[in-house]
Amino acid sequence: MSIFLHPQSKKLSITIVNTSEKHFTLPCIRSVYDQTKDTDFEIIVTDNNSQDGSVAALREQFPDVIIIENKKNAGFTEANNQSIVMSRGEYIFCLNPDCKVLDGAVDKMVKYMDAHPEAGILGSKLLNGDMTLQPSARNFLYTRSLLLQHLVPWKLLPHKWAGKYVLEYWEHNYVREVDWIIGASLMIRRECVEDIGLKDEKYFIFHEDNDWCWRAHKKGWKTHFLPDAEIIHYGSQTVKSIWGRKLTLEVYKAQHTFIRKNWGEWALFKHRGLLSILTVFRMIAAVSLRMLGKVDGEKYRESLEFYEEALKIQINPPGEAERLS
Image (cartoon, rainbow, N blue to C red; front, side):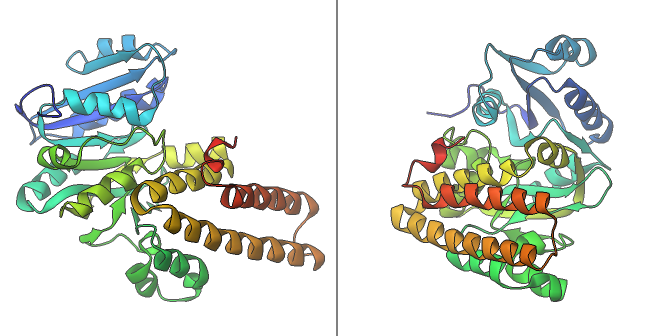
C-alpha cells in the first residue's frame, strides 16, 4: 500500500511547515514562484496552529497553495509528514519557511535529480543572511568521524584536508556524495520515500534528516550535494539567537535517539563515553584559562554551566537525557 494519498501528477511537490512565521513563510513562497520557471510544481503548507494570521495571509496572497491546518502544534517532523503524504510530485522538496530561493535553485535541483537516478536525496548549498556559507553536509555519527572532528586541529590545517574527512568543515564547492544533509533544503525522490518510509516522528525537531538519509543509505540510495543550487537559510542564525547554547544540548539528545534506534545501546554507550571525556577536557581547559586570566568571570561561569549540563546529558542513564529540560 502506498504511503501517498494521491497518485503522482506533478513533477515536484514543495512542502513547508509554518508555525506563526508568516514573516518568513510568505517571502519564502514568493521566492519559489519568482525563481522556479521550468518545473511543474505544487506547494503544500502544513500550519501548526499559527496565531499570527498566517493561514489568512497565505490564502489571500497565494490561493494556489494547499494548506493543511492543524489544531495544535504537531512539531516539525509530524507536520512535514502530513504534507508529504498529501504530495503528488515525482520529487518532494522539504523547504524550511525561513529560506529564500536564489537563481533558479529549485529548477537546478530537479534537473540534477532527472539526470542522476541513483540519487534518492539531494541537498542544496545553504547561505546565511549575509551570503556566507552555512555548512549543510554532515558525516554519519561514527566514532571515527567524531574523533576526527573533535581531536584534530582542523583550523590549523588546509581546508582541503579538513573537507576530505569532516564534511562540516568542507567548503561545499563541488558536486559530491555525502552522508547526510541538513533538512532545511532537502529534495527526495518519491520512489525513495516509498522505499524508506516517512520521517520518524520520534524526532521532534533535530536529526530527523540524519535518520532519513541513513535509512536511504541502508537501502542503497545515494545522498548528493549540489553547490550550484543556492538557498539562503535565515533560520540557522535565528534559532541560535533564541536557543543559544541550549541548541547544542538539544542536538545531543537527538543524537542519542538516532544512535540508539539505528546502532543499539553499545554504540550509544561508546558515543556517550567519548563525548563525556571531551566535555571533561573542555571543562579543564576553561578552568585553566580562567586561572591564567584569559577569560572574564561571567564568560567562565556560562561556559562551566554549559559543560555541566552537557555532561549530565552524556552520563545519565539511557533515556534520561532526552527528558532533561
